[in-house]
Length: 466
Image (cartoon, rainbow, N blue to C red; front, side, top):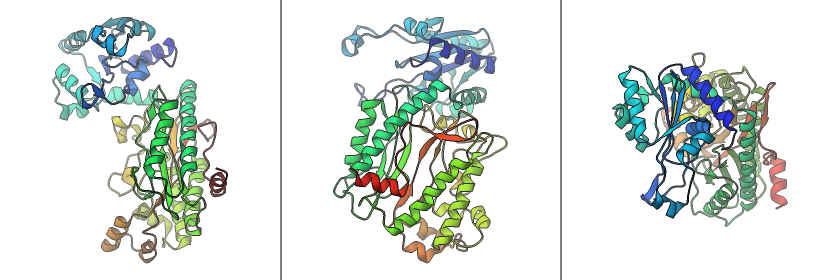
């Protein structure tokens, strides 16, 4: 376990205090087959289970009785067949003791606990499951069809877990720093490799190896592409071409699930052309401007739109946008260039707790999401920042040919966009700069001991020194 037994005890006690009634079921993950049962994907424990119980073994369920203040670690001990193939592991009772849980039981006991709670008219709290095997388990236990489980999940539990996990402790910050150190190795290696005739897949495979050699795995499928205008441009066998830009968005996950997430855009030639500098410098300025705004009590919504205003002003100076800036922002014209939000929470999930629902983790009664406007509907977080939050700062500018064509045909935002000039940028690609930041008492700071080069002069100097 990453933290002391007392840490996990304290987390569970705080959760029980917050919920106050009923029983809480927190399933861990099971193994997941890739193409047949014995050939599985690399195992990854559920983050919430790991946060409260600290154990990585598959096939476990944590139960907290908020009324009687009892806890169980539920799971079957492995048999001799498993020992032959995978080696011995601690018994469930030993794992329970290590996590400070007083009771352990085989999996059959889980139904007894839930059945008794239901007969007593007590609420069974569970989080919305995201794996189909756990959806089936919830169906078996509670009789709720998978299609209705998200709606039936406990909002009390969701909000309680979100509030606990959102504010990172010193120990968690240290683990996030470790993830960022691995991310630094990944990105600087990728930047060194960028040159004509190297393929996107070569770079992606190399950085994935770094993530696994220093931690668990990549924190998400790496985006490595000359087509930076494609938000999820996954690597292909294409060789890098002189004059192009390579966008690399990747991160690492430590053995304890804590994640990093950075993006860098590197010129294949090692130096930026003037046109590339013109666009890159805007993204660079927006990235740094966000750092001056982000602080406790500030709405991330306002940070996002502050960056959008700056971006609009700079694009007007280049002639790509025109008209009144506030009117352009209100109309969503800036989303032609940045059709995503400025950033998201990060922690034990690279989009931390997003599985609970974007409108829950990222918004509150004061700040509600706008799901109607293109671009703004992809803002994953908008509420006020708190000390201990970890966010990504990731502005970008993209030239998406299909989007340019669609808006031009419809005349959408024509009073704010120079479509004739946009036509000349259809071969440009896209630029994004992303870093992980910790909200501190007075503002924010980068996570990670070393800063991945991102200023134009630093990127070119780094490439020249390889």
